[in-house]
Image (cartoon, rainbow, N blue to C red; front, side, top):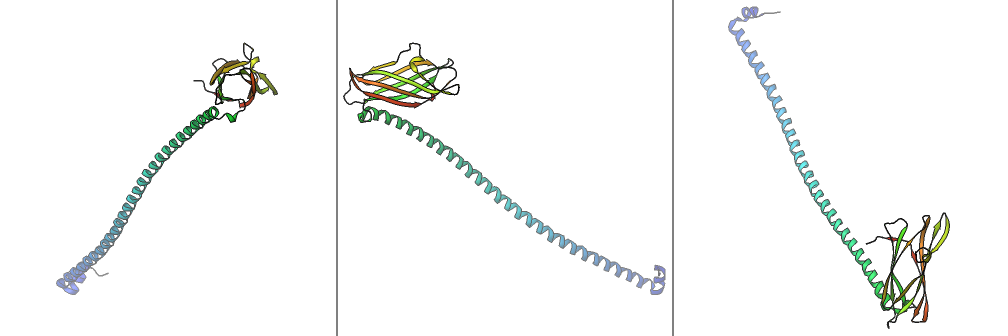
Length: 234
């Protein structure tokens, strides 16, 4: 292997150092070229990454805006739905109230609906604080255009089951007085009667009948059936 001394002796000092300088210049140029090329590639790659990052940032901002808009729209829709639900509930309650008022006035103003001229309105059963103790409420209306005093007695029968067997009880047997409920009025009359049910008796329906009189003349008979439904006491 040729060393530096042999090269100096063979080519002379001047040529030797010139050759070393050329080699150094070539090596530096090659290193610079490679470094510049690598730097250019890195800068290009960095620009691509920056561009991708910016695109992702813009896309993320657009998606965030869409989410915010959808959240606001969802909240508006929910609020609108709640208001619509409240409006519907109010309308249904108003309709039920109007139907009740209409039924009341029809019973008063339309005598053809009942041959006896008597109607039962506002039937209600309330549970009292005492166990097995209930309160019956009735409103009796006269439907005749020419008002006259109506009178008679209500015969009330509770139908249900007791110990798995069909059973009936008359209201007169469930109250302390043990007498039928009498009525006498010209326009309307409100009646209340408290009674006690046997512990094992399950009521299904209430049948009300009456012989209706105008003074002493019998106008006819009234029969009406109501489902057993408890109302809240006021």
